[in-house]
Image 1 (tube, rainbow, N blue to C red):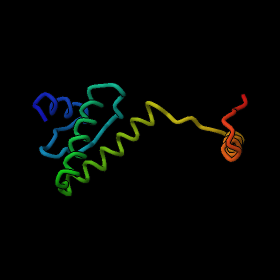
Image 2: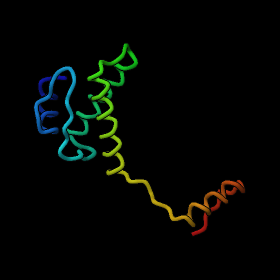
Image 3: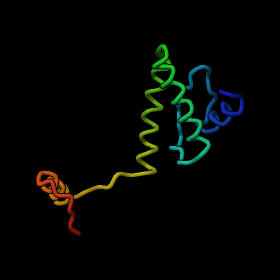
Length: 105
């Protein structure tokens, strides 16, 4: 993490970051796109790469778990999944069973 990235991350999470891991105490879910989101995903990507290159410490593993959860919350908040009624779900199920790609409005 560069000095500038560390400062941005500390501002985003509202506290001082500890190298090499970061104790996540997020006050607000960052918006997409934002500097906070870029920092969060950058750190998450570094931890994922490290996980597959040789493993994580227990602290890094806990941090990655928090970052994965936060990422899911950010994505769900920014891009909520459509909520279908029981009737709509049943219609989709029937269409899939019948091999029909047709959908009625």
